[in-house]
Figure 1 (cartoon, rainbow, N blue to C red):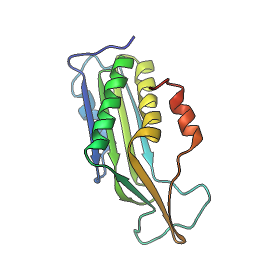
Figure 2: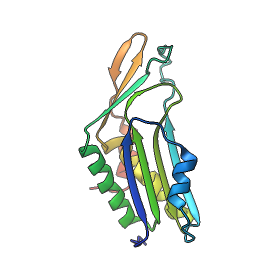
Figure 3: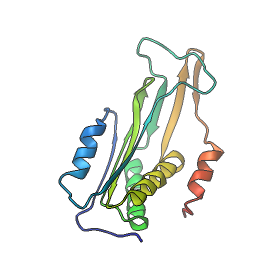
Length: 165
């Protein structure tokens, strides 16, 4: 059963700067002794599935664009929906934009709750939504040129299992 707790916190950041997982989780827990579980997901830039040669010398292999203001509001609205669906204490979503290189962190979803099931489910719910409906646009860059990344049907199916409106 979902709950809304007065002391629960929700934070969303859309930023160009990298984040520190340990610091983010520590801030999320911040002395809340009702927390019995922390679940997190960190997405990173990986080699493309087709093994296209990527640029070297610090050139980006992925460029993420977003619509400032709207992106944050959409993610905040989804966090609010997640809070109504799951009994969680805290939620932290960090999504980066701009040029990124292989191995760079892209996204963090961290959730605290009294029990692991709610934390895991909330984390997965938010990631499934972020992959499909957050207003970000990805451009992959290789030595052969750049291309916009198309939506994947399997991501839509993952989101649809949550019966989102």
